[in-house]
Length: 279
Image (cartoon, rainbow, N blue to C red):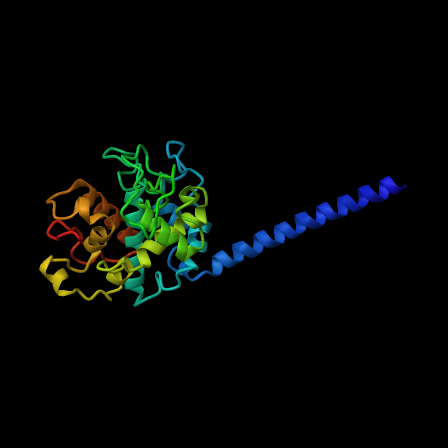
């Protein structure tokens, strides 16, 4: 009799836990639908942008799901919410274009074109170093840790991992690999980089919502406001000031495709070939 009661109780508790799990899941789905970014990026639009992210050829298959993107945006309420509708759409299209280039699996003759393969990778393949700037004592490297590119923006270098960790509540210096192991955190690091001013660089967000005010040094370096300046912020030291750079052209190609999907124009100054990189 006691065994029957015990089994009945266990069954009841199991059913109760399943019911609670289902309710929480539904609540999360509802919260995703209610998130402000969903007014600009629906699940269907997200899937049409990242056509091949679930392709078996992509190492990040199953990692960059829509719900993780939406949840990460909650930490950055100004993302995609400043300015008029066109400005907001353009900013989101620019952000998605930049992270697509950083994680691209596309090539010139790829199915659906080279700009349909964003979010294919979640960490850098065959890094040339461990990206440790030993001279930066504020954000010291830890032995055996690699600060290679990870996540949608391919967060790199110890000082970026350290600052992102402090802002987002994780230990980026001791556990940099967590960026490639947690989908929401991965998107948070990308949005953190996009939204954060790092003097003398403005934030990519301010550039795309027309809040960038060039300094005398910016004017002398021809750092004009537009999508090209976000490329300069992200990787200008390697890509800007170079006529016809293929990496820059790839970023622009993604942006042009996404701008059409968002039904918005790209604006001027798409590349950075005439800009000097930030020092």
